[in-house]
Length: 299
Image 1 (cartoon, rainbow, N blue to C red):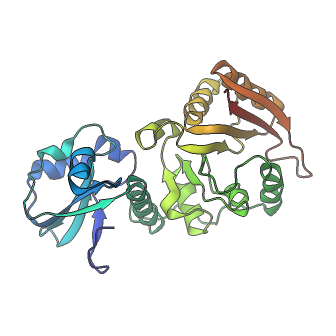
Image 2: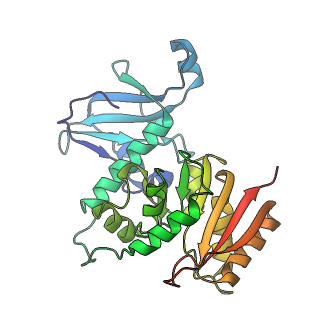
Image 3: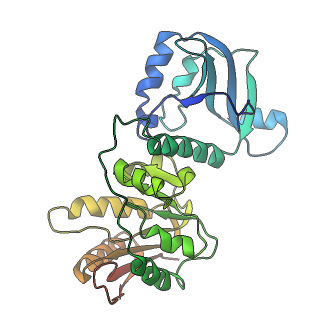
């Protein structure tokens, strides 16, 4: 994407997607007046001639080749912060310019963070001693349930994916889901086990997704075994599920352990203007995804 030597060391200034919103490290770097040997500007590419692209597209980020404290490339982006922090960085007439689709840029950021997490770049030691639990029967049953519901080849977001056990059902359907969970250890173990794709595995609060994706970006949004939901935490789950649902063009699917949870979710979606139904999905295990809420946007 940056059109530089593969052997060059490249680092992202921030350590998480959440940090890309508040920019704690980027702010310090800009205030310190870094010594820069070279720079690359990254601009969004949506087609058109050169003048149109320069006028219509925005700058996605800047990559600086630092000389101190070590020689390396450092990528800074204010794209998701809403601050325009990089405007304080003087533009150089010698800067190289590369143009990329924002989706590819986003995938690059997510992949870098995921690989860094998996390689324990942000941890002193790994507190998890064993690989994540995987129950093949669950993935098989979920695959059968989802097959007639999800569009083939569509873009799907799975929220609260945990260790990626249920994600395997989506993969068996030929989908490449974007996956999200707040628990970095769960995502890390899923990456180490090969259950999640680094370029689409995000450690993030689902309620912050609107900083990175527009509404109706995905064909479907799914969440498996959301909860356990009770009267105490329902306000939190309601907020997560309703806000996540805004990213679906057509439908949402949320599975639960109990019928009561599925009905709570369905009622909340209906109140927000969705068509929703509760579906029983029992299996021999009697543990996972026993009930589901299927929501569709009203026409």
